[in-house]
Image (cartoon, rainbow over all chains, first blue to last red; front, side):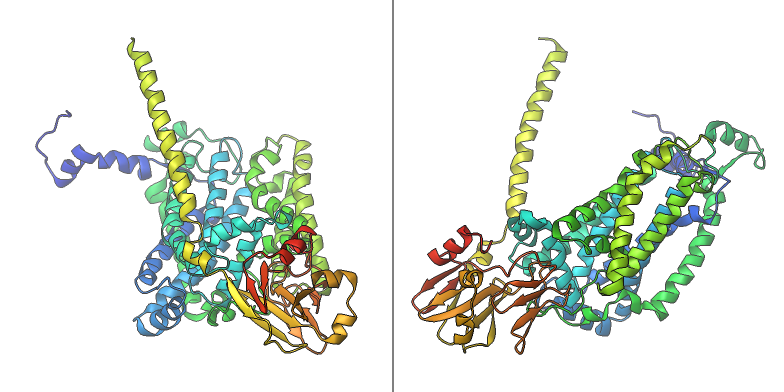
Length: 404
Length: 174
């Protein structure tokens, strides 16, 4: 047994039992962040804060929500919105955060792509990040089912139908996922379970993995410079704070991080209080009706780009293109054949590739929202093909890149 | 026996026990997600086929899905092509179009236009004629026909009768 002495203070008492000082050093004051970064490096903290907002608002919604096909709609639109004091606040925070979290995820992702932050030992950061993207997507979809409105029901119908995998006609699999022939009570209950327990647990585990993956390779910097973190941190601790290339995570980096978080939160609560409509689809204010399809079914904006890759093709080819789009991002560290871990601006053809991909995904998103008619379906088809061509071309573009 | 080999044996023995337990729990988890017996038992609907007016579309419900029932007019019956005849369901001396009322593309419910005697799916613009055949893509195939069994003037949806089996065997429906 370890040797314990009479404590001289509460801190000392805790220190002897939990080593809180050491933990604080490892996690914060001696966790080193490069100085050469910009506001885009704060997106991780913005995401953590948004996840916390989702969790807290979700807990309050959970106390009044009824996961039953006859009660769910009213429990959200009547009980929570009209009866519960400030119930509207939790719902609007939850809905707006679910939408905004994807905007920030996309910024976070494209920042990583632009600065090459998936290379040279940072592959696990990228992979765990993409796993988080997938689980967040599942979390968003399962949550979208819960108000049991028309869009919930029909999105549930269409998305679960995808699992019949076109001409394979795996209707048994679809019925197994739903627990019924159509989305009904069994479906609502299990998606409720997924939304409030299993997927949040998976997300929290993956966030832990995502942070752990950062520790050894450390955070990337604006120039992709390889920093000797041991040497630079010694320099910092020896007093040469100005000469060192690194700073403490807390309080140095956190103070700037929270500045960005503060600006984000002002924007976020502006949306919650004055502009929440974009996150609440009007069609979903009609209760689910299994005998009437809404005129135009479309997903939330953050799924539109992959929906638009599914849509312009015949069923089987569309599914293959859709499957391709879902997994291809994970493979980025291996599809990018260049050893350069520097910003895209210094990488020639890759710079063009990066901006084309970003523009293509914005075009796909816009077309996914429009009805598939005339010129829009042509643009959608071209953009979907361009997405596939860009990814197939990536290894060839980067293979010939000069070492910088 | 050396300690190391004893540990090796214990490791393998634990692995075997844990493996059996893991497989067993996966089976239980899979089965727990299956549709319940009550859900399956509710999966049969009996229709009285004598009540339908000619040339009018009636939507019934089976397993939570809409079922289109259209009693064909004499004019329709006379004008049927071979492929339309193959989809024809005859009860007594009445001819019917029976179909699951979901677009075979992604499962939206097409609307019926009585003047044109055709179906239009608003989701992605697919069209079907009064016999249930595709007249405009994207739907990959004609309306699916629900499993049915004819008993006198009644039709039981959910049970497989010889007429349905024949349709399934010849690939007219899934």
